Length: 282
Length: 271
Image: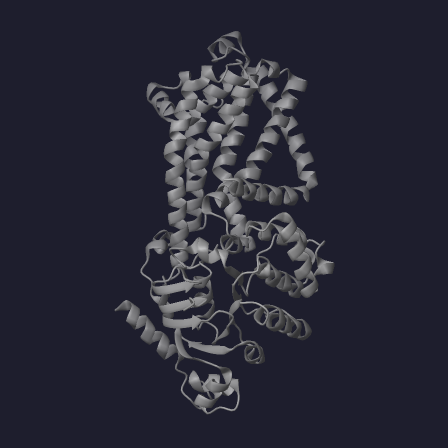
């Protein structure tokens, strides 16, 4: 049987408290107490698109960053294409395309083309292969006009598209996207979703794990939706199945019911936080 | 190996293109070098005596002696500073995480961070020496350039280890460069930069003998001012190589450990 594209087993992640002043010197060695993930298990099959749905601070970005080898889990395992994200991180990075939602991480005084060439070549593309790939992606992401301009002169939406193009440059088999359409206008977001569905997911064996707060986007792209709240995986199923099992008419309603946030229900986020924190302290 | 060199070249290309967008800096640095060389020339004219010249290792002018000490300080500064400055820039611009998810190995990432600053420092030193030779009679034709090159490469290797240690500190604690502070502080007194170590009290001479900067400067002055060959400066070169062989693996291990700690604590992108 083929190895799943992504396997996450009982994944826990906690962070030490932030410190200031002289206590900063002890921060790197502090005991982790703030729980971000409290034992998440999840699998993504080859060619499958799975959405991570959750409120701010639910643990979505933490999960993506562990898979991107930018964080080391406190316990549990995460594997990408059969490779452990901690012990075989270089193998993982070879197969990975990563887009962070918050900062775009480009060199502002290099042009868009120079930035893409730099990152493409660091991902072992030859100069000609990288140039060819940049031209293709620039066409697909409407970046052709921007290629010769310094990144500092581009709009945030254009930089967002540039960041998505960078994640796809070396044609990774696993794509991790954190809020991919965050700064895009409605037209660009719709075009990106169409591109992702038609050019990436349908054509190849690329697997996609993405975090989003945009429910129509989740319904349009995801084969399954993983609902995360306070670091716990509450459900993971097809959008239609989620709605059915929650007795909801929309994904939004299903999400609110699953997380106990529907109108009139007690807000259990902080309570779950406390429970998870207690578990760690024990 | 070729792949690693290709990636290091990419870092150089990136930093060169970025530096090219600040063209006036090149001009300003060239003018600064002129003023620097002039300052050392006139200080030397003020303090130079036959007795002082006799006390100097190569027996030349104090101008040449102090200028070599000063340009070496620039090199030492680059070796101690480049890694953490590059890391700080990557962290603040948000490129650090994107670099770390590429297929770039840690040693390549570390070496690539410093390759352009080292090249730029070499160019700056060349400009300094050119001004000094053209306008103030610095004895540039006496040098054995092969030996000078060998000394600078070995010295960079040796002191880069301290720079990488400093970058590890920055990764963990986010601010400060204690290796630079400590090493430059000691070396400015007990390293022979602006005066020969022979004038120091015995205990400071002992400190100077334990300081690799002393050997690097001895070898550099011998090659640059005395025309010594590589064979003639083998002893200080061997000491520097030994220092590099000890400090480089330690510093790389420290950097890998610090990086792992930041991935555990989730502070990789924090500043």
